[in-house]
Image 1 (cartoon, rainbow, N blue to C red):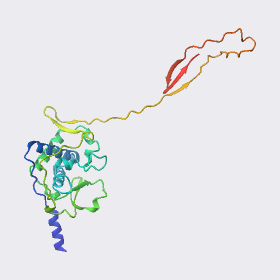
Image 2 (image 1 turned 180 degrees about the vertical axis):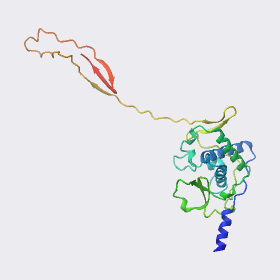
Image 3 (image 1 turned 180 degrees about the horizontal axis):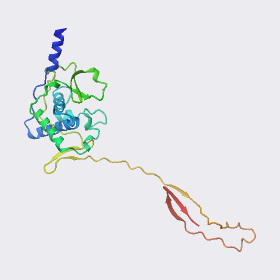
Image 4 (image 1 turned 90 degrees about the vertical axis):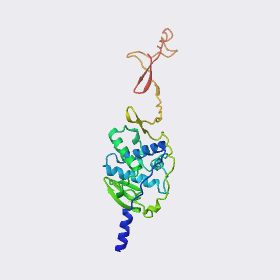
Length: 257
């Protein structure tokens, strides 16, 4: 039993190998942007360690065969669907809000260090996490690794060794998901970080106006006499004025004399 506990502790303490980013400047820039977004939106209010832990999970997934082999591919996995996005900020509208320049720069520094080979060892080989405020259905099927700030990190039972993370990162970094689903933060040399907002078509709802004709008679006026009665022949029929149209409370009313 003691040997089993020691073996489990050794596996739990095993950490990922340092990440090696692409040598291509453009590819490395896209990786940095996507990883910065993940750190910022997932752990903006966390400590530096809390942000390092999130970055480590993203890079762990890049090298696991169950996930895409690029940083942007991991971050935006499933974002093209209404449900199923791996990171909720890519499909719940979070990226439509303005970003905080100081918090963005802090997340960017954490992401840059991770891409340069910094490893946050307490997370180990974790592939999943969630906040301490929720209990997702999948949590009991995984092995708890550690708690960092407001997040609980998990590793898979069958992915407890470095050998399981055999997927080589891609030489190219694909573009992120289509901009119709989110607003993508971009860097502006003059204004600093800003947000390019996605445009959404709002449905136009037509509300029909009920046309209800109303006859209005002046107070004390007599109705016209029916033909054939006494005195009716010599009396000329009253001339009807042109109706006036007004709208009250969304109802179109025809008024005449």
